[in-house]
Structure formats: structure tokens, C-alpha cells
Amino acid sequence: MIDDTDPFAEFLRPPSNETPAERATRKIREAEEKRISDTIDEQIRQERQVLQKQRALVKVLLLGQSESGKSTTLKNFRLEYAREEWEAEKTSWRAVIQLNLVRSITSILDALQAEIEGEPLSPSLDLDEPDVPVESRGSIDILSTSNEVDSNQFTPSTLSPEEIQNLQLFRLKLAPLRRVEMDLKLRLGAATEEVTNMDDIPETQSDPGTDIHSLESPDSRHMLRMRKTRRRRIQGEETVVRGLRWREFLMYGRTRNITGKTRASFELLESADGGASEIMSGCKEDMKTLWMSGLVRGILKKRKMEMENNAGFFLNDIDRIASLSYLPSDDDVVRSRLRTVGVQEYHIIVDTTNTLNLNARPRREWVLYDVGGSRTMRRAWIPFFQDINAIIFLAPISCFDEVLLEDPSVNRLNDSVALWKAIISSKLLQRTTMVCFLNKCDILKRKLRSGIQFRNFVRDYGNQPNDITPIVKFIKDRFRNIAMKYSSNQQRTTYIYTTSVTDTKATAVTLKSVRDSIFRENLASARLV
Ligand SMILES: Nc1nc2c(ncn2[C@@H]2O[C@H](COP(=O)(O)OP(=O)(O)OP(=O)(O)O)[C@@H](O)[C@H]2O)c(=O)[nH]1
Ligand SMILES: [Mg+2]
Image (cartoon, rainbow, N blue to C red; front, side):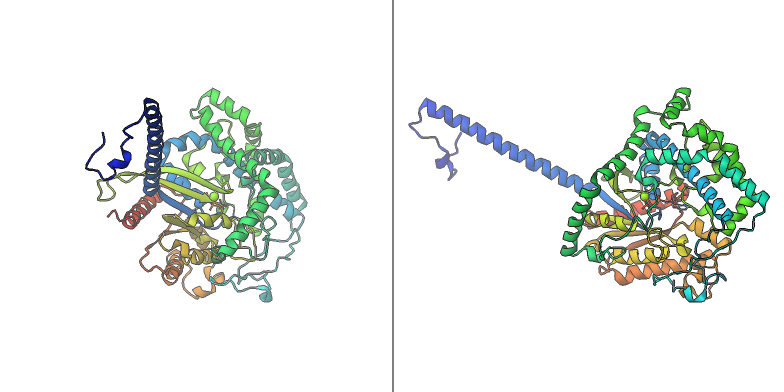
């Protein structure tokens, strides 16, 4: 029906002398036009829905140097908010935990061999160490980066022939674990190898390190794309295969549904692990004897190998982990170590019922991005800066006496401070909610208790007491001052927490507070409150 009052009606009116054939053609044309118009309407509706959904998504990026605890924080989120998926994947972590344990054993065996052969000790960074020549002690206060030390400290072996024989016996009895280590590494792929300075040689002089600003200019972004393409061409296949292997491995747990302690489950596990469990079970008593040996402990102490502070420490759980029927607990999975390669994306539904004074949308979808933290991997962070709602930055504050694996000339605490400064002052992130976890407080406590002097590594600390409270306050003030000084958006709130993210109970409380802060800020910026 054409409306005569409509000024456009005249144009739409069919000609008065329209033949039946013309009428039929017109009807077909009009039907086609309507179909196209409806399709466009539907597309617009769908795009609007996607946009609305994206707006409803809360995107959180986990950042920090390698081994800072990003993946461990992510595990805490999943444990709390994605329980079903967590349970389905739990068994698949068995091989990772077995590998963590076996690597601790083989690194002890390597230390024993080094001791027998009188190899040099690892370089010390302690300014009070009598065996570090004064002229080689670099400045390692919290805002400088140089900390070169002399590594040529030879230590002639003082072991008796009988002690050497005992140590050799350990090496012989535990030799089969070398094969287990190799097999598990092959099965799990690249993530099982820590990055060293050999893997992390900059491709050009403009390697980013902590200099995130240099990556934000259009020129360097272009360079970055070129370099990425070139690298993909060289390494592409290998990287994809390595990535897939770990994912497939996780899928194994899901698809076969190995959750119960049934005989069938164990048979499946055994056939899947290529005999690793059997060999480990056969070596169980010798592993325990090695770890309990006073002679071995003495050598580890002399060589400054604090096994308890290492990633993936399971030496106190040999009985459980080296048994044929071993199934990982929540705690084991959280404490296990597997380096993140590339970027991993996880979706969780965060329940905010009763947490905020809101009636609408009690459950929101969060996307968490977990990235690799070693130096060359930091390039992959930048594309995520554009539309991220919050960053959780992990700074392991126990690392004041350690150097980066990928660059031994850089103190780890200095690296974290420099990274925090770069992130805080990034123009792309001025509207992003910043959360900082000063992490690994439990290890910091242990180190201070063992007598390690904070002031010997962080000169600015002066003569204040070597106690956890003033040291944490000192570091917290540094991070807070940087946030205040380098945020060009003075409205932005920065949340700083002290954490030990392997403590899942305490972390659950922290995550609730983080959730509320991010949620509230996100709503405020979307003008919903
Ligand atoms: N004792 C203790 N260990 C921690 C803490 N946080 C993390 N870890 C351990 O440190 C190791 C490294 O943690 P990850 O979460 O894998 O580190 P990451 O930042 O993801 O490292 P990349 O993936 O290499 O970037 C793991 O074995 C964790 O269990 C902590 O607060 N206390
Ligand atoms: Mg990780």
C-alpha cells in the first residue's frame, strides 16, 4: 500500500500502464532488494551484539619478567573461577610435575660432579662476599643495572676418596632419570626449557629489554612487524609444533577424562608417559637418600644452590610424586613450573554477586592474557596494550640477589623496577587500571631468615634493619612513587599488593579485592555507574 501523503510515494508508485510481465519482474526485484536490506540489517544487528559483548568483556593482561608468577596467578584465577576446566586438566600436569622433580635431581647430580671436578662456584653478587674482588663489584642499587662480578672462583675439591665414591654411586644409581628428563622434555616441548642468554641474543641493537616506549613509535612497530615476519619464516614451523604439543597434551586429560583413582585410569597414564613413572618409582628411595644426605646438602650449601627457592621445587614430595599412582593435587599444579611460550588466552566467568552494590550483570566474562616474560618475548605484549582494561604486573621481590637468566648483567629486581616504570608511563596504558603484585614474599622471608643482607644488594636501603616489614615497605614505596611520578593520567588508581601466589588461600582473598577494583573501574569508565 502506498501512502498518498508521503512526498516520496510518487516515485514508488508502479507505472499505471505496467504489464503483468513487468509487474512480475518488479516484484522479483523488490523481493531481492528486501532480502539484501534484511541481510544488511541482520549484519548490523550482529555487529552491534559483538560490540556490546566486547564492551561487556573485561580484558586483563598479566605482565612481568620470566618466573615472576604470571602463570601462577592465572592458575589461581582458574582455580577460583573455572573449577570445572581446572579439574579436567589437572591430571595432565602430572608429567610437568614429574619433570620438575627429575630436573631438581639432575641439577643436584650436576652440582656433585662439578664439586668432584673442582669447577668454579656460581658468581656471587653479594657486596660483602670476601671472595668477590672489590674492583669487580658493580653498582647494583635498585635503580642501576650493572652488576658484573668475577666468575673465575676455582674451588679445589676437598672431598675424601670415600666421599667421592659415595657421590659417584648416586650418579650411577640415578642415571636412568636423565633419560626420563629427556623423554618428558621431548613430549612437553619448548616450554620446558628456560630461556638463557644464548637464546635471547638481541636480533638488532634495538632489542626492547625494558624499553617499551621504543616499541610504540610507528617506525619501530613497522620494524617489529618486519622482524616478526622474518622470524616466522625462519622458525615458523618449529614454533607451531612446539605450541601444539603442549596443548595436545593438556587435551589428553580432558578427552580421556582421567580423574578418578581407578585402575583403568592408571593404565592409561602409564601407557601415556612412556615408562617415566616406572623409572621414577624405581629410583624413589635413591632420590630420597640423595636429598636427605648431609654430604650432598653441604655441597649444595657451599655452591649456594637454594633448592627450596627454585621454581618447581618438589624435593620434599618424592614419596608421593615418584609413586605409580601419583595424581597431582591443586597445590602441586599451582607450584609446578612450565614456561609460557607465546600468548595464552583464557576465558573465565567472574561472579560478582554480593560484591558490589549492583543489581545488573552479576556475572561477567573476563579474558585473561598470559604472556612469556623473558626479554625477547616482551615484543608480543605491545599489541595487547590497545584495548586492555587492566594489567596485573608481577614483580618478584625476593629476586634482589638474582640476575636474569637471559642476561646475567641485569639484576632481577632492577629489571622489574625498569619494566614497571616503562609500563606505567606508556601512553597507550594511561586509562588502564594498574594492579601490582609484589610477589614471592615467602621466598623473601626465607632468604632474610637465612641471613642474606638486603642492603648488600640494594645500596639505597642503607643501614635499615634486615627485616621483612621495612624491606617490603621500602620496595612498595619505590613502586608507588614510580606510579605517581610517571602516570600522566593523575586520575588513575594503582593498586599494590604483597603476595605469595603459591599460597592459594591468601591469593583467593587478594583476587576478590582485585576483581572488585577492576570491575568498579571498568564500570566507571564505561559510565555505567
Ligand atoms: N615460593 C613461591 N613460588 C612462586 C611464587 N610465585 C610463583 N612461584 C613459582 O615460580 C615459578 C615460576 O612461576 P610462573 O608463574 O611460571 O612464572 P611466569 O611469570 O609465568 O614465567 P614465564 O612464563 O617464563 O614468563 C613457578 O614454579 C611458581 O610455582 C610465590 O609467590 N612463591
Ligand atoms: Mg608463564
